[in-house]
Length: 462
Image (cartoon, rainbow, N blue to C red; front, top):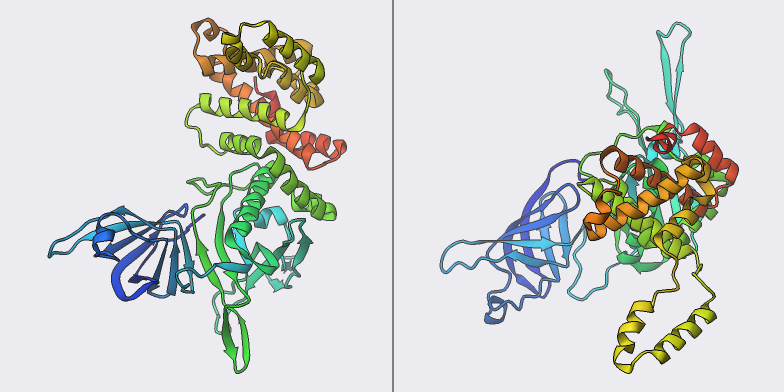
């Protein structure tokens, strides 16, 4: 989660089961969503608590500006006990729910969760700001037309909304007229759901944006509503209270990304006519190939400090992708089982368990064959037959060397610029397969390959 400005607020905190004992503290949230509570004293000074039997699953607070907050899944990171003096302790907090105080065992459910994602304005590409300039460029008229929200039904029972927020100039402005426009997502459910159900979809939507933008982007400005938690806006009229949420989320990069429209794999306008299908296809695909998607994004997001780690993540990701999308085996399953039974029968009893372990996965095709199958739809972009065979051998030899570090394999493994080029091609192949999983037509994929300079460059790396 992106925290753009310093977030540090003082207040009083207590356990929901012991409201009479309130202690002062400071709640801090760092960029990335790491949350820490510094308190003076301890929440519970009983013998059981001093022996480590603390129940900090939920802490309630009242902080400056925000008012009531609920801190979830907490534990002491540093616990200091002062005998007659003042001591400070530090509490790790998993999630902050700002604007409401829940009881000890009260279930936390929501009907909507809204969130922004870095790059969403550029990806959606819809704005209500209109600028009309005179022919001599000396005068200009700026207007704003509010944009209607776009709603898609998800197979999970949620609705995904694309909304457009805006601010207009104040009435007293004489030297500046400022209009802002912000696009954001909202998930809604008629039935109140646990936040974990929302966060799962938020996570997957964010990764879809990462893929489309070909950049690591992060969520921000997460807010929720629950139909049962309302505030009065006028006599006899209420609306759901706006509840802010803070928690550590992935993906996250230390630096905010620079969004380049010309480097995007696809934009919202490319899928708008079929967006419901594309969104649902992404969620269903994610559930099937989640491990390989995780490996892909760990490789491209900069999680790996060294190129070796990036390569291994991509190699394992491609191998896992093929495992999850293909049932191909070395030989017929029935034939393999008969062969295993025959071998085990003729093997001494004392060695059968060992032999079974050695041949258990013997019917699986090897890494080289999996890489060949994965690159086959796009083999022309790897090169001719000789270049493709070299690519496959290089992937296999380098993976084996970096896994086993055998001196015999060292001379055949890729290093330096050769390893970098190998990673770029593997990354590009992965991207094309994900487009295929989203059921982009071959003509659309060819168009992306022709027009996307960044993608073409990955295949052209030497």
